[in-house]
Amino acid sequence: MQSNKKKFVAGIKWSFVQQIGTQLVNYGSVIILAVLLTPEDFGKVALVIVLIGVFESINGFGVGQLIIRDGTTDEETISTYFWLVFFLSVGLVLICLVAGGFYSLLFNLENLKEFNLLIAVSSSSLLINGVNSIFTAMYNRDMNFKSQSIYFVISIFLGNVLAVLAAYFGLGYWSLIIKNIAPVLVLSFCFLVFSPYRIHFHFHFNKALIKNAWSFTSGITYFNAVNFLVRNLDYIVIGKFFDLATVGQYSIAYKIMIFPMKNITARIQAVLYPMLANIKEDLKRVERTYTIVVSGIGYLVFPLAVLISTLAPIWVPFFFDIVKYDKLVSLVAILSIVGAAQAITSPVMNLYLISGKTGVLFRMGMLMAAINITGFFIGGLSGNIYTFVWIYAAIQILLSIPLSNLIPFRLVDFNFKTFIKKLSIPFVAALGAYLSIWQLFNIIQFDVYLKFISLGVIGLFIYAVLVISLTGFKIFDQIKQLKSIFFHSK
Image 1: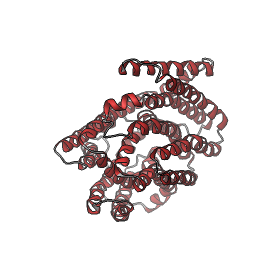
Image 2: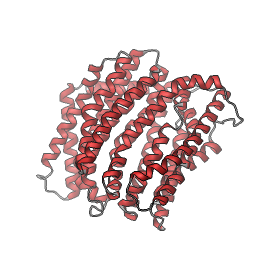
Image 3: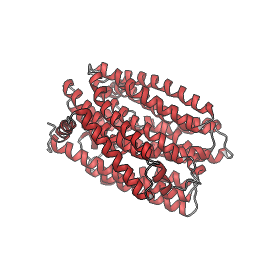
Image 4: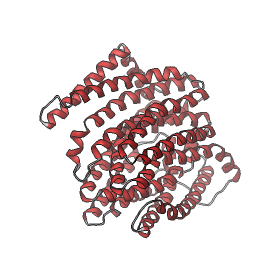
């Protein structure tokens, strides 16, 4: 059997291969589709995806995390979990269709039947992803990322090619629906045909097993629903108070915003949870690992967010028509800050999962939901999209990072002050780099490409100098610790 060390190394490598591959394809297709489609097209589909996403966030119902946490391999247990997820996913599709009729009434849309049809077609992905979640859990349980990553990249590539072709041949916003559904269909085909894992589809339903499982998965399910709704309620509020063109530009800016989180945090998380589950009996080791990894994410994500934000006036017009997408530069500049904050808070869910405190996870999600919802409606009522996103950013930075981590740290008796102290170093260094680039932006009068490179290099240099100064060269020790965690785990 492959050693843990080799599994962790392979997991990190293939997770990043998957994420880099899928994101290159995704962002490439968005740029092409932005030329072929209108902001209104993006806005209409963004509102559909929010509704589908709320149900998708609970799809799988935490069963995958349970399989990983318990290392479940028993065929009858897997079969029971499969049918549980399958029937619940069917129920989700039906509920989504009913909810879609009421949801469409929230917005001032010209053609409600057309919008409801988009919802109906998109809801099919809920059932497909329900099946996929069991396969994904078995891959992650065994730290088997290679084949899974290849399947993901292939499915994303083929799905996005079909979407671009659909847009080219005049299918309009339907091409964006294809972009979301086609990849999950291809992925499901790959799992069912080529995966070494097999699910025995004979009906097996163990009531006692389901009852015991629900005590763990219920909190995850409730939290995921609330968390996704909060993180995407901004679309609903913007759709209510602003026009579809604004929703469309916001949706593109949001995709750019989560670039750091998707490409760094998500892939580290894919390996981090199984790793922590492996050592969950040694809480001191869990604390050390979690603190080092999350602060390490900060060192990577904060400067990346700074460059995306400060250099947006240069690179956004290069890829997008800023006459057509007139709000995009400012939205990207502000929302990239939100992406950095969310990259730091998202891994905290691991602490709730390994401690089994999923009920507390849900209650914490409700608290953050109340705070974010209040901010969203204040921003929406202001009638200014930029006021809206600045309120969003302020809540994420000033409240979300400390509050989201404080409670779980107390649950497992971790040192919260040490964690915040470590995290403050990359934050302060990134702030210094941000202010420096902002001050130099109008002073440097080079050619646009040379200006982009010069400001980027200067920003990273200032960031590096500040990090080394603030840590007293201890940053190199942390790099060694990260290397030790991921490449020398036992």
